[in-house]
Length: 498
Ligand code: KIV
Ligand code: ZN
Image 1 (cartoon, rainbow, N blue to C red):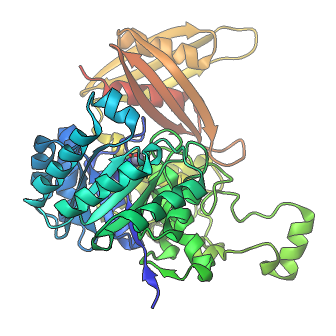
Image 2 (image 1 turned 180 degrees about the horizontal axis):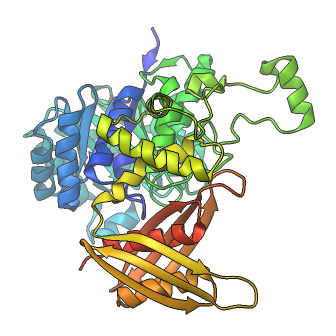
């Protein structure tokens, strides 16, 4: 019988730590349910002591999902562990993930400590967590740069203290695949009692080797992989779930099994990208827009003769249905509902009515509505509870004239209007907005991106605004890019800590 590889998804913890990717609790539940349907074994739902929002999300996710183990992150600190245990109270299967830095640089600069003291703190944290739960995972932060001999002592000590899973993170994404695999093998060869725990990989992608390192760890005996959807995560991200799942599916020679339903990969990828406003790069393996597009004549000719000439994965195996219906202004509510279902989004009839009305408005402006547009519409409702909302915007601009904008805002139910000029339409619109909201705020970053192609496409705007020493991330989407820019600015303002 093949060995089983456990998938530990940290999209909602390591992935959600990325600036601009923050989700509210309702959105996190949506992602957690999609991960459950995808077949992940463990969902890392958050770092409860870090904020009331994270604490609440772990509680609500624990209530919302049934099969996966719900995991909460802590430092090797009793207070963190108390709070994590409390947040996990409704989880059917619960795990506390505690740990401490073990590399010399972490020990010296982060903890001003020494190797022996770190082992004591690690053991104490695991024992303390075991008072609450039977399933305790220990992480040796920066294990990638930790001396193997010392790492083996740490791992042996925490397993003896009751750790059921031991995570060997390449926190900085530094290791080479052979080096990381050798590290895992070293542990199997030198740690007494290693068979009592599952060894887990957690690889970051700073040098583009996260998936290669993960697979090298699996070849050396690791039986849990820590991954995120679309590979999102701190800095250059984490190992992508979809890549590991498809590697073990394509390489039968690896002879390992998992619970992932690969046909749910594409819809989960789209859902996470859309909710987090985090575009997937077009050439991203498995889920990028071009992952299955054959453009050169030679390739197209080969694929037409026999698809196996240039394709190692059947797109349908990851849930990409080529026959997806293109929705237009004539599509009915049922077609929209069906497409939303395929994309993993479920709505009440009332919510569907609202999205359908928005869909018809967009279809009036844009001929073909694609999946990205639909996911944007599905998310648009998120602004409904915003304090500041855009009522109208009118801009005059052109060559040889100064742009002029007038704007109407609804702030907590009260209407405000202003007009201003600027060196372009966006500048004029933002200047008008600043006449209503008189605060010292500065745009730090501003990117406009078209979703696919065509002059009728929806433009997406990501913006960073600095206010009161903090950076706020905003997003807007509209067929009018000036309106999308103002929406992104208003999105930032709605997030200001006042
Ligand atoms: O990269 C890392 O070391 C982590 C740990 C907190 C598990 O994310
Ligand atoms: Zn990490």
